[in-house]
Image: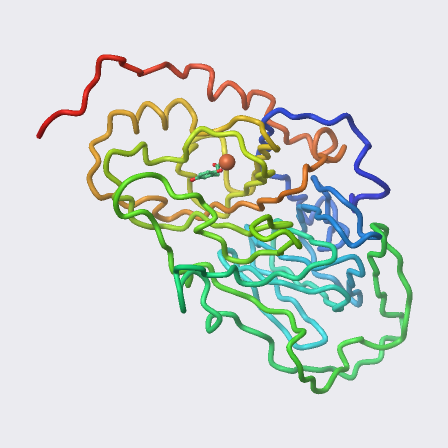
Length: 366
Ligand SMILES: O=C(O)Cc1cc(O)ccc1O
Ligand SMILES: [Fe+2]
């Protein structure tokens, strides 16, 4: 696997807007790749040793893990399947996780992944913090991701001897180690407590959006957050762009053009992202780094500069998401070179932008 080996300085920093075409899934007939051998680190920052930082990984695989399991000693994994469901066996039981669902496997939990064909997804890893629901503030008692919709495994065990050897793979300080034993580690008969893996279906997200004017900060779409010690500044937020109604008056409804103090790594589970109908594809990704300008492409800008502002469905049939972090992320050599999926013409999507500013325009007195 292409797990980050040593540091975040393998390649020169690149502040440009970056976009990746869908990451390649190797065919099983060419080469068998399982969840662990198909893990690739694309970007991140910080360090698991000081318990501070994050990493974003892409997994692409075609084969189940057989008599092997994985344990991450460095942090928690938030897994976002994009293609193919994954059956995760953990010490707590099993979870089937499909695209449009997400799951969290915390630090140290051993798990094995079965797949059922070509499989791809995204992983947000945080060192030294756990994911939690965001504070709802003035939203109050309920909304966004509700606790009732999180599912945890039912205890399941096997007492299985593996004479040929069962391999435990341990990610420790960014490197993979392995050891062998002659039995399955999933021999936990019962458990209690609340340190468990869990999954969540993104369809259950109770979307809150602007109903008067202006474009709400997408933090309103936060599903889970890994908080830092500074209130309001997350280590990382997992944010989604679900199907919803757009009704704002006197407003350019798509995402605004902006630079900001967060790194925005985006992926697409299905459909089209509202700010980029073309080019940003399911199974691909983009990274807009701290203070790097970005926003809708030319086509989106033109369409929405003249569109009549009637109520309309936004993002129907799609699910884009963002790993948003206060860390300034480095991109790995795999991300920039080895994967060969970098879209070198990404910047061209903004080149035709024209100014529509008319200094003589006045609000009409209707
Ligand atoms: O950049 C993006 O596409 C993500 C995003 C969406 C939005 O609606 C407002 C701000 C923002 O960063
Ligand atoms: Fe943004």
